[in-house]
Image 1: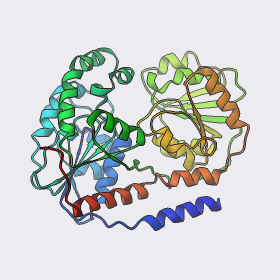
Image 2 (image 1 turned 180 degrees about the vertical axis):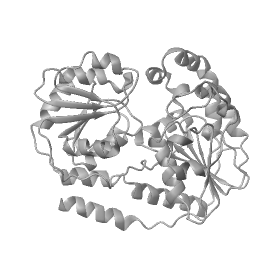
Image 3 (image 1 turned 45 degrees about the horizontal axis):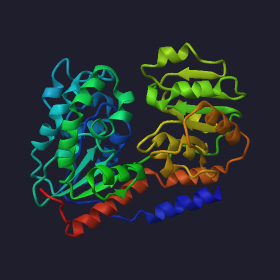
Length: 398
């Protein structure tokens, strides 16, 4: 654990950047829950700017009742159209506002942001379309270039049904609009190296990588582990590959706890082997306990980043992940867990046995998690935005 303490001390020593005092706005695609992208917005809102100059938040749709009160109160504008009865989201009932995607670029373009010196677009869809005043600094924190436009083959499993057909029909139009919008930000920040490469590939733009904030303070690597207990925490949708993981654990001498909700729940419950249990979302305290008791965490999906992997490391739990996307930024093979070349039953089974058969240095795992902490995110983004504000920025085009 001494190594983890040294890493934590080094992290704290790096935290020197001053809060931004400029008048700022954050423009986020939509708020349907409090997930990774929304946590990025919340960290920027609460900690990147000076306390006496909090930024305003703009969005297309906001289900305020599922957000932390301070974040919900900071949202100064959302779309009237998306707020209509029958369209808007009520709590976790999804509503129909997503079908308005073709209209969203025009909504964001028309936002009046003339009062702001710095505008941060938090975008995985249309927020990048905003048009700040010509002398304002516009930085896009890109969670990924719009999947619907550029990666329809990987996004089809996420959408499904009529929505998938509509997105495919609009993909060429969205791609053209998205490329045009990509010319406007003064600078790009990517949430992982994989996303940085997509920005270069699709937009021809450079980006710096600043990983999303992860709250690692509530997790400890010191808790007693439960031998043979593995953990999987995701939504029950196809691209997370829950059925593959269940089949891999069938007849293994280990136990797997799966935590999640989603459209596959009924089908999954019908095929669970005795050594696999499936539970719905749990209170945070209980989920932290499961992270800390597990001897291994399973993540066989390609993600833009992958916050749950960092949470597992903070709990002293090594990770088995797919060698794609954000996992490459987080997991060092042999130190923080194992990376699989392909997502198949045989590879997962072999990795589970390998991981369970050795001792992992929990201090190394927890130390690795520290570099993705909220403190590090805030400091790095403050420092980067400050450097742009102090230096004339070469704009691509307007």
